[in-house]
Length: 268
Ligand SMILES: NC(=O)C1=CN([C@@H]2O[C@H](COP(=O)(O)OP(=O)(O)OC[C@H]3O[C@@H](n4cnc5c(N)ncnc54)[C@H](O)[C@@H]3O)[C@@H](O)[C@H]2O)C=CC1
Ligand SMILES: [Mg+2]
Ligand SMILES: [Zn+2]
Image 1: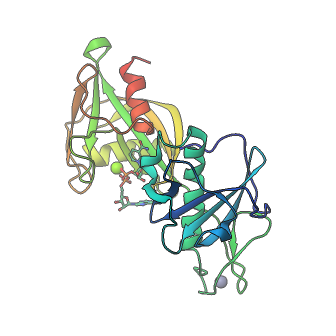
Image 2: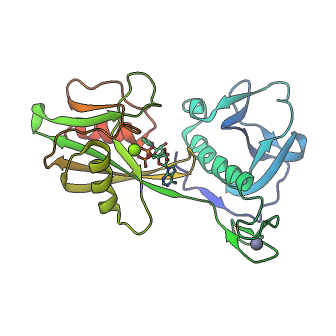
Image 3: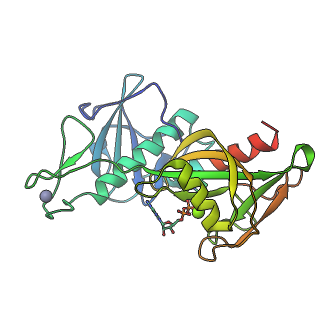
């Protein structure tokens, strides 16, 4: 979910008449029944956690949380389910808005002294008026590794599923980067921990912001360098080598996992 390049983030934009409103409640986005985003002044809606986000092609953009009943003519849709409903640039911007509103909701008090925090007027941060501790939106780097073996039509991909995946769905391996490790180190460690396999020929492919809840996905490919499959029971329910011609159900089209698997399956 990529924020459009034409979006100019700014905390100084006053929420005004024709603002584009991203209003969330527990991971769901408020849309008009015809699928369009609400527009207007935030105070025309029952909201709190109002956050001016910036300008999209000159139009003010505001994020907020629904604090009352769903207004007549509107409906709440799971954010992932708005893919294909919202235009791609607004789907991407929704990913930014949900992270700012969620960060606001979860940083109401200073983590050091417990004093209520105040929104900075010059940057996207929340500051403690008592001790000065500053909190920025969280971004958690996650490496994704698609491990392959063999060549051409005999090429196989190492795919796995977690216990919370949709039934039958398999994906590339992924894991959070830990403090004080490189992306390369994280790739080797995650693959070893989750499936017991060693890798070589690690190659960076592309990245994707993923707002569930605040990940930055960084995708790699690598080749199998030995080791029998040994699954980490808490995180990996099943894993196996799949021929590029006979892949299982894959993650949804807008996920980086899908893009990575399809790129490799095409031989790129
Ligand atoms: N866009 C995509 O295609 C995909 C996105 N993802 C995302 O990647 C992220 C991580 O994937 P997993 O395999 O679940 O990670 P993982 O293999 O590191 O294990 C997840 C576990 O790590 C711990 N954890 C949670 N937040 C953490 C943090 N900020 N730092 C360190 N540890 C943390 C929790 O115990 C959690 O159960 C998730 O946010 C998931 O939504 C995962 C696969 C595909
Ligand atoms: Mg994992
Ligand atoms: Zn403080």
